[in-house]
Image (cartoon, rainbow, N blue to C red; front, side, top):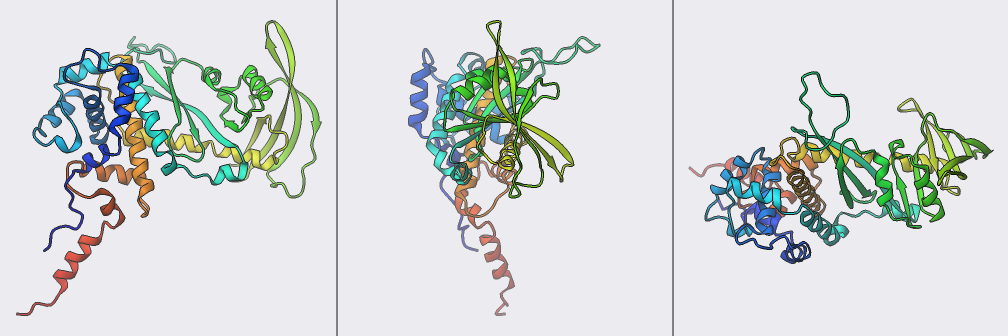
Length: 399
């Protein structure tokens, strides 16, 4: 049989690392001075080691250092200059600022944004729709304050909350923040810059009337769900046109009171009541989009589910149950590197014309991480070599 048509001179891991422009790493390193006083284990080596941890799904420092030690002499193709010992990687996770990895992620997103963006929704709405949500990652130790009561055995676990903002047209977060699990979600709204070309979508855990007033004054749209105990006055009930989706039951203009500096000021908003016949549930949406169709507001909120799928994808495909360090900085580094790995795999998924499920793609790369297969060529036509072998076996023998 001839050689595989998918054979390549660089391993799958090397091809994934090659997606990261060295200039991005150098620029981020200089900005955060993350290589100051470091002689051997530079930021680039640290990044590659942690990406290996994410893609190979390693659960401990010993697994990472031991597996990479077995690659001695074969590291040139994936640009690793220094194989870390367990203590070296542990110290780097503790001392090197996690911000440099966040900077690398943001630069990569800027570079590959056009590969993963799908502007169909923006073309319809004429504004950028951004989804906001958070997910809590339980920790093995009382590092960050978690929610809930203290257990009877007295052993308290911590929790880190990952806050994310993602464009509805993209499959990865555009901005991320970290906090303890006990931090209330609405604190994130203070970090958002009002923009008249943006509509924010978030659940009712982010209800903050002061933020709603700030958005309205800056002509920034938002869609959320109203709290069950919300106090408001109905000002006007809008007529529901026949062309509106039959699930829309009410469309009302309301006023709520916003407390600021010991004074209360009224804020005019819109409340849309929608009945979902599939879920058999009734929803009440709160928004400052007065001109938009009522059924489109319900449709915008439904898009919020995309960020839930993102969090599920991250937790299922990358090791965020086992952390390589018992400090906040190490945990943030590991999450940032999981986000970078998720971004690289999303870019590969978008580059390939053949449809691949994300989990299947990650599993394939994990199995063939150090096999010399041309990744894109194989993913486009994985059955090519198999079919060639089958045809040769089925040819009738001449003797």
